[in-house]
Image (cartoon, rainbow, N blue to C red; front, side, top):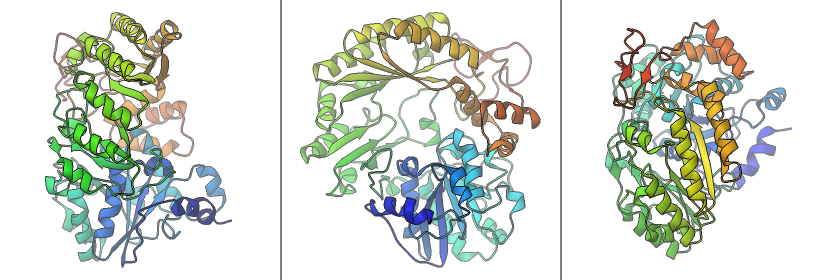
Length: 510
């Protein structure tokens, strides 16, 4: 039974905007997760379009099967979506990866595509393996055992460079020579440190969808990027550092790339309520009968007019981010959101008939105490008196390229204890959705790890579990460099009260 004909072809037939092209240079653009997740990635769709716009280059997509074990038992080659050719039958095998926890999926993806996952075991006969996306910009080092090329930063600046190098080179080393030294190009065979990030010039923006499909996590939604970067100074967030300077697109630029037939539009941006044209673009689209989707809105910039536009666009639940359980911790993170801002947003959502308010929250911040959790419980009860409340709670995961790089992870037991208390005290007050503390720990290891963490993932990529991760990390000699660091509310993020004299504990690794 053909996997492509039975599983992939129905997905292909439901798409609008698919590109089909024949060219001498074949690129497979793969995503290390299922189809519905990959097709919700705006960056993935942009790279797909850009490769297909290049002379003599044809790009087809591939995704990790929903049930990889069952797929492997069929003995078939992983197919591309567009034609069903073997995904590994190409000159360039490019992977776009968004999440640290997809590290093992990257290795599995290479495996099911018929390729040796380890870079050192591949040769001239194999495709060049290139990996890019938010994960690589955050921390490329766990990927160095697997990738021939790692792209760091904006893909818009890189795709023409890579395409030209493929056209001009006859060997892998010639390809390396042509891309070596370009912004955003990290060659693990030649480099030990990541390069200057690639930053797309404004004229290459906005980013927008190529394909609309009902089978995406964002069903039938056309995505368009209102802004790249973020003007806010929040210390925990990668948007400001990873995506470079804040670049706002003009309202008409966004409207011009949205086809007339689109019925749902998702506006993408780190701070949409700071984007000066959100209301105009939203009103223009809703007047056309278009449904709207947005990422979370800052509670300090919400007003009734913006909320009315979002309500007209079909939003039923209003979403904001608190990001810390107390006002003192929000000040420490330079978040700039007060409890009064959250209460005002709840009142606006109630007055306009939204069915509820969802608040995103992090716990496990370095200086956090039980008093901060008490404040979270208290203001959630106050919010619940105004409108129905859902809390989305995630453990804090320190990331590279932020001042929190050397903050300790709070620990699974600490986070689980605080989650248990929150659930007990708010179980009749708010809907609670939380991320696993154990998998957040794995994410924190990958987010700051090196090649040794990649090799730990290689040991377990077929049978991943928390226990397997602990065993593999011990086998490769990993240790937590940051566990003795002690953040203090009295010190800026990135400075620590020391329990020893190591450089990391002194807060020198920022």
